[in-house]
Amino acid sequence: KRELGWSASAIGVFGGEGILIEGKGMCCSVGGMVKESLGGVHVAHFDGDWILNTEPLEEVEEDEEIPDLSYDPDDRVLSAVNSTDYKRAYFITVEHKTYGKGGKLLKSGFNRDKTGRLHACTTFVVSINPRSIMDICQLDQGVSTHPNNVKIYSHISDAAAPPAPYSPSLVPDSVPVLGFPLRGGPFLCSQSFGGRFTHYTPATYYSLDFECEIGSTVIAVDDGVVRSVQDTNMAGGIHAENLFFWNSIILEVVPQGRKKPIFVEYVHIKARSSVVKEGQRVKKGDRLCQSGDVGFCPLPHLHLQAYESLDKEALSIPFALENQSGVLVRPEAGTQYAPPSSSPSSSSATPPLSSPIADSDFILPGASSPPLSPPPSPPCSPSSSVPSTSPYVVEIDGKRYRFKKGILYRSSALDRMLNMADIENLMNKLRVRNVVDLRYGD
Image (cartoon, rainbow, N blue to C red; front, top):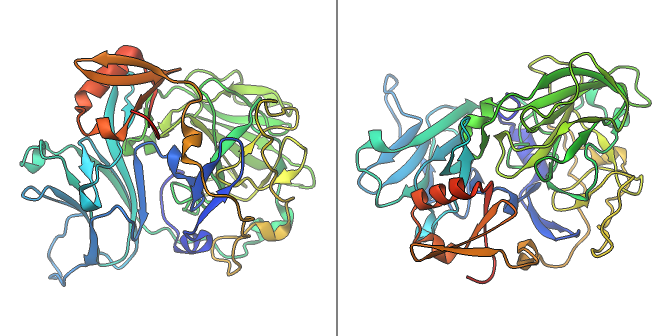
């Protein structure tokens, strides 16, 4: 429920320019998200360099029914159709190999169902203008020409109305300050406020994602009372169906300087990991649960957001976090952060700090002020995401696979020769959790 909807004003606020934030293990941040963290999810809001084509929808008869998705069995092209007068958001999962512009193979990812079985798939998160068609991808030649045999799942929603530009409940001078939600670190912020992946809706606009190993300790961001615990779901990965199944804990807190409480939600937590129960009082820094990858979650991470009520229609509100130096920050995608009690390993450079929080740092959906521009940084180093030590190599039926610490590595060159069923079987055999592409080497 928190991942759906669409806000035109939110899209306009954060823009689409690529930025780089320096930090330990530098990553490229574009549109408030780290593209390397999408794990088989491809994002295009109205246009993109990987989509096949976009064009206006021809005039149709008033009583003519137009499908939301169209598959042409002759050229194997999957298209999304918006026949309405509103902008629409589409989450589409395809369980076949897919190809983008120029015949380029689009990276696939993996999903874990509620039984724990893994399967390969590719997911598209796209927004489409009114009365328009987007040719998203071409399916693999091995796909049956009969549309009923094409494995596609979708969730499609109309544009959500953006919140009022300056709602009294969201004025910047009342931004709550929260403690860091994880122990240890530093942790990469893979999606910041207004991120184009899933934080572009009014419901989730002011949300943060921190990549962390499954089992990382999640802690209370302030003194408070546990209001909700949901940790029984098991499924996770990039399948769009996971938008409706997740685990979370909601904590009611009254941050310093505020009279009314807010509700902080921790999402994607590990199944059956909660050590607290509803109604329990906790102190800032107390252990709540373990982080996980349950729900719509390409890579294991903790999703954090806050509301002013528990109403299902409540919108997210801006907040600030304490970092490792005790400075209040608005985390940016591509930078690593840690709680005040943690310090980065001596073998790694200390991540730079974001500027201290100022009222102007928070741009509300619908506001006319542009977001703050980050300082210029050096070009992104693609080799930074490559493991520091060579992963183990296993050869099966003449095909080479690499895995290490629960991660299967594969090269894009090999990917063209691999059968998805082979990868799925290997993933389940080795109990591998994630898949990433190698940047260098075979």
